[in-house]
Image (cartoon, rainbow over all chains, first blue to last red):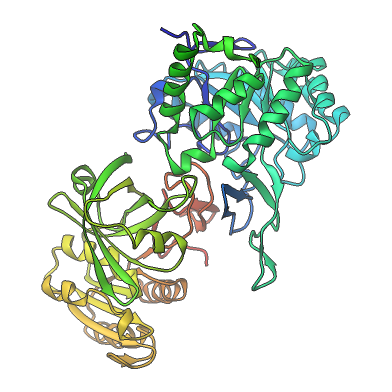
Length: 305
Length: 261
């Protein structure tokens, strides 16, 4: 019997398998197709103060080993989220929800955090700050490309919430270490690594970018080794728990993340191909722990030989 | 609620040059599907990370689900190679389909393989008189017309090259029929699936006549369940406000009045 429970900076989960923000809607869309009993937490699509329309179409293009998307954070505003989305989720799903938030200004981040926290809904387990979406100019990316700015936004949100606070960081920085330290010093409870990698696809016949946004973010199996490196580098400089994501298609990918230093993993793009990935990753982790003599999945964290 | 069902291929045959009928043994799915809904297929033979492909349902009856598709790219080329006995992972039923009762005479308007969901719809409609207007570039793009005739549907065709029926767009014979109905003051309801140009033409006619129009949109999709927001269409709500609806869950069938082209 392997203990699959993990504690992510105060968020206690029965399973270390989560979903990545932006790939799982607001948590109910995959009911019937995903085995929710194997999920530790659901991370919802990003919300902000007001609803956001997202980018023009086309918003995605398939590439070898993954996809490039520029959805542009289309999503609901915090009020509609608390009034409509959250109660609907809580009626149907008994898995803690991590609420992903973003804003155009530091104050907006703090305001969303404050309102979600004030609602004190029992289904909400934590907040995740998105400071790394490559597809929105104002907000998202701009806060995650300078450690000083990152420190400011995390410091502003910290007093606005009593919930565990995770920060989702970008992979496209020379070194992740100063960003990790900025989050730590500003009082974050955990890190989500990685967001998509900025990418571009050009139609050579029309000589135009395929995406309406021109550029997008790369996700899927092809980003996995890059993500493992970022998790490894981050774990080397912090004790904060790391939720690792980027190309988890099978248990082996999740195990790599754990060995590199993750305390939990999230599946994302793989869901689009196989909603069964939640169960297969969970069960594969149990099987691996049994075969290698680990009694608890948390023993895998950073357990590089 | 959508389920990921392991189905078995029963038949896989040509529906015309470059078009295929794929018949699946899929009892749960067949029982749950309504016309206009779609399924998301994991295509064997593609790399394991390949995204699923969405397909309209041509028929769902007696535990079997029939898809009608055109071989257009890498995914459908791989799908065309599956054989009877092969297993196929299918997520469905997905999306919001057509209404299956009609306030007036149902007029079905199809472009090419857009006949697929309209055939399933024709089977469920109980009206005494239903007409299909089918258009294609050539006669080779007119599909499954015998299957509509077997249901008692009147079939009217047009081809761009004149190789079958009226020469030109299918809106030619459609407009003649609409004019006749107008002269008789007879109510009708439009149901359409095909290329965007045709969809807009049909939606315009529904609005101009003040009759209901149901538009099935074909969009590239990622998740198929409303989770990723990749397949959006601008939609106008009753109060006049607009939003980016997801074709996979808010559609693929939209009311002609809602669509912002």
